Structure formats: C-alpha cells, structure tokens
Image (cartoon, rainbow, N blue to C red; front, side, top):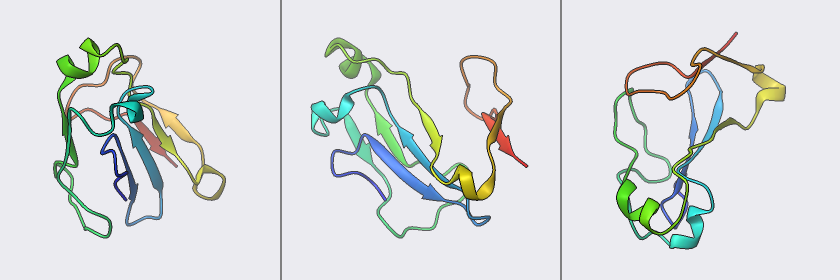
Length: 99
C-alpha cells in the first residue's frame, strides 16, 4: 500500500510482519511534492527494491522533519520489535528484529 501522497508505504513481509514506513513528520501536507513512488499496492518486492524516493532538501526547506518512523502495525500478533540500531540508520544496516 502506498499512500496517495507518496509519503508513506505499508509492507507485509512473507513472515506476516506488517510495517508502516512514514517519511518525515507531517509530510502528508506536501501532497506528494518531493516524493516519487516506485511501487503500487499488491506489488511483491525484494530486499533492496526502491519503494519511494524523495527530495530531502525540498522537504527540509518546506520546514518538515526528515525523521522517518517505521512502525510494526501488528506487533500484538507478531511480537514487539527489538531495536538493534542505536541512532541514525544507514542504508544496508538493520533497524530492529522481531523474535
């Protein structure tokens, strides 16, 4: 699921974990300006598949934070995530695990 404003995407993994990735805070107000979706609802993706690209300078210049929450929306069913990243996450590094 990709939000119409392209600022957020929902993913369901093959193990049943459901994630919401929300790029920035309050960025829905940009109405998609600065965002480009590369997937659509129902697409099957692999690790490394680009989901959304965005223009961080445009978003920051508009006054929005680039803080990007990643939420396990069905944690009650699959278990709470255990954080493995202490701070800023870099491409290719893990954020959390679910046991």
